[in-house]
Length: 344
Ligand code: FA5
Image 1 (cartoon, rainbow, N blue to C red):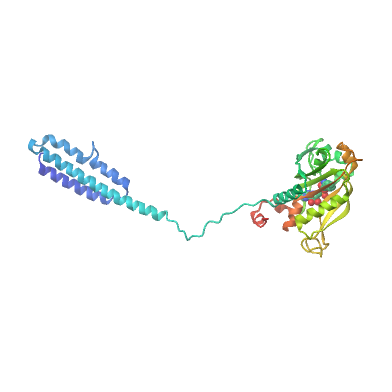
Image 2: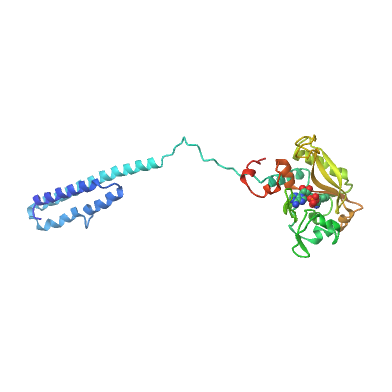
């Protein structure tokens, strides 16, 4: 290339090529790549035109350079404008795709709630601690001695058959009752409740191989069955409602003498008789009694000076009664359709 005329023809062709090529560009990134082929400092086709300067006559060199710079400026402006347009378009598309419909109903947030057995355990713990009881948690693996022998149930005692036991070894077992905590309690005056899991080889609609009990023990001077009855009356009214009454029936536990089963007046029918109380007006909720002197002595407590009462209740049983659950398995299946309905 030797003169301006030829240069202008080349530049006109390049401009046309740029205009046509631009039609196919849809993104800011593709503009950048296309622009590079014309305006890259080393390889760009417009920049390379400068190399032709050496073939041009001296008196035309200034005009030649000016024309090339003019073409560069035009191309730069062209690409900037195009880039701006495409960026706006891209942004518009993004706005469209990310648009939030604020009239849509929100996604429902599910709030968790405590398991019914945990709720019952917390409620009972609150009730008993407000009456001055301390909370003591024993261990799930117990010695045969603490679970049975110290509770006046030595080897071969027929009462051992009352609870089918999971033995881990001749010495150790999974505790069958939280009563084992009675023996580990400190010296009088004692006022403790002991909640926890217990285990028995037991399985039907109201019995489970693993369930939870809460044991209560009070030992002090002059404690009688009347104190037990008074405390139970207060307790059942707080858990089942003000109208609830208690009834003691004779029973047998090796570690209490006398022993009683405690019934509450049916909180569903008020004692008239219904399906829940099997038409009797009463529901059995726990076992209790005056602590057997032998147990006190096994704990190193002077049974002539001190006496006490103990009671033990099943937390699942209370939860079933309170929430109208007819199969204990429902409390272990973690079925949200059931658990969602129980929120106290
Ligand atoms: C006892 O376990 C005695 N230790 C209670 C006691 C303590 C009496 C202190 C006197 C003094 P019993 O085996 O009845 O007693 O169990 C107490 C409660 O545990 C029952 O009323 C019942 O609610 C619950 N229970 C018993 N076995 C099961 C089981 N397999 N599944 C679910 N709950 C059970």
